[in-house]
Length: 323
Image 1 (tube, helix red, strand yellow):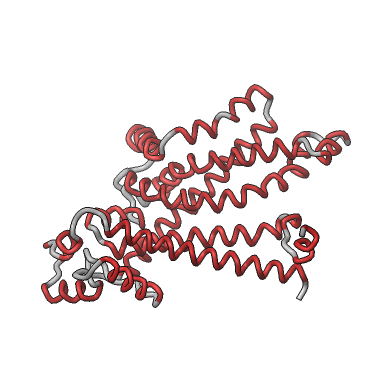
Image 2 (cartoon, rainbow, N blue to C red):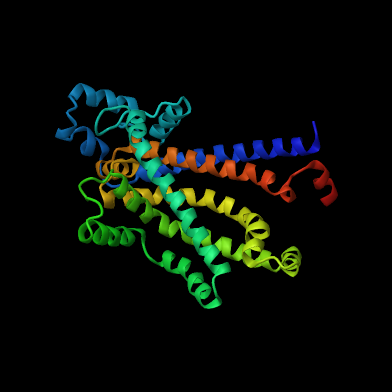
């Protein structure tokens, strides 16, 4: 096995181990936080007349989760079910948690993916403008990411609904899953997410512009557009790979607020209902799902960087040289 392949295998195993630890800690911490929330899950959920559960059903669920036992015993029981892949039963509806989560997931995943694409388009548009427009206009564009970051997510959503929903009637608020409504919901998510991405790209491009190879390219008579497209864009985009992975967590968190504002059905709406009802199994399942997605995206980003930038390759030979 070559030193490069061996180093890459060690990197994969290391990142997998870290990811498993992150998911485990996310589950345990979420269980503790949910357990100390005010209110009694049995009173709030199981004995809610709208749940339609009989006394036999309630007794079965209480025994299944150990709700009449200390929190530590409940945690051990929950960990045992989690390891075996059992997400449990909703305390509010009595339905399998896996069914509830995976029914809501496609809508949220589509919204987050659309928002990510829009955020990339916005960030690239800002970067292109900063480096190709005249200095005065470029200076204005440099301040745009800071402005995007300063506006809360829910304010952006309310402004877009007010202008395009109620004033211009571009979409109907009663049809939150229509393509146009989905676009504006995704734009609500994309605007704040694009800001850190644009800042990283602009900073990286500023550094690359001062490198010798960029100066040589310009001295050969290449236009600013050709230098930007042929020589600066690719090396400047590498830091954004890690940034995109980190922003996935922000997209998932922002989806909860955005789905509530636009009235969309999805994981965010499911979380909102579960928090109000104290539906602990559903909340834990959503947290674990978010942690798994976040870990997987970051794992893919970490493992793809050595292919995109050979200077980051980890090999035993290099380690020996360093030591």
